Image 1 (cartoon, rainbow, N blue to C red):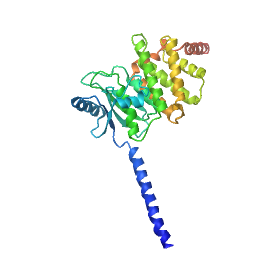
Image 2: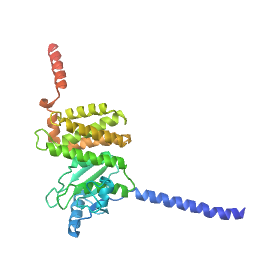
Image 3: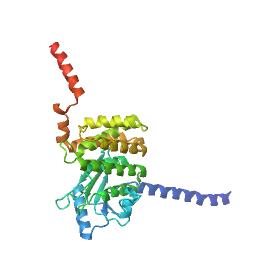
Image 4: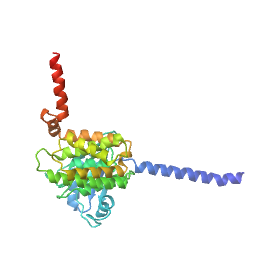
Length: 315
C-alpha cells in the first residue's frame, strides 16, 4: 500500500501542477492587461517613434505591449491567396487597440500624423464594419500612418493583436470582412462626388442589414437578404444613388457574412446595434437630415396625412 502511495503521490502532484500551469497560461494569454500597439515593419526608427507618440497621445496611454506587422501578417489575415500582398509587402499603417471590459461596442479613430490623415482608402466606418464581421467586440482602435497608405496593415494588426491575446478570430469571418471592406471602399470611391451620398450612410445601411439578419436567424435566403438590403438603402436615403450592380455586391457580401458564421454569435446583434449608434453619432449632421420632413418615406407621409385628416374632422 505504501509503495502504491509513493507512486501515486508524484503523479497527482504533477497533474495538479500541470493543470495550474495550463490555467495560469490560459488566463495570461487572454488577459488584455495592456493595450497593444501594432507597428508596420517598414517604419524607420524615427517613424516608429513618431507613430508610437501619435497613438499613445490619442489613446492617452503610457503602458502597452508592442507587436510588429509584416507582409506575412497581411498574407495570413487579409490575403491568403496572395493576390494583393506577399511576405515582402511594405507595411506602414499602425494601430493601438484597447480592449474594453464594458459593452462599449467597436469604435475606430483615424488619427492624423503630423497634421495629415495618411490613411488614403479605408474609412473609420469601414474599419468598424470589418471588425464587426471578423468578430471583434468592445474595442477602441486608433489608426495612423507615417506615410500615405491604404491602411490594410492597421487592420491586419488588429486581428493579430486579438490572436496575441488569446482571442484568435474565425478566419472565415476575417476573409468575409476583408471582402466586405473592399466592396464598401469601392462603392464609396464610385459615389464620393454624388450629391446626397456619404460613406457613413452606406456603412450604416450595411450594419443595419447585419443587425436585421441577426434578428431573423443565420439561415436566410437570398430573397430575404435582398429585402433587408432594400429596406436599409431606403432608410438611409440611398435607393436612387446605389445602382443595381452595387446593390448586388452588397447582397453578395452579406451572403458571405452569413456563410462565415458571423451571425451565430450571441453578441453579434448587440454589437451591430452599438455600431449603428456609433456611426450615426459620428455623422449627426447627415443623419439628422435623413429624418427631416423632406426625406421621410412616402408611406410615412401618407399615414401622417391620413392621421391629420381624421384629426381635423374631430377637432
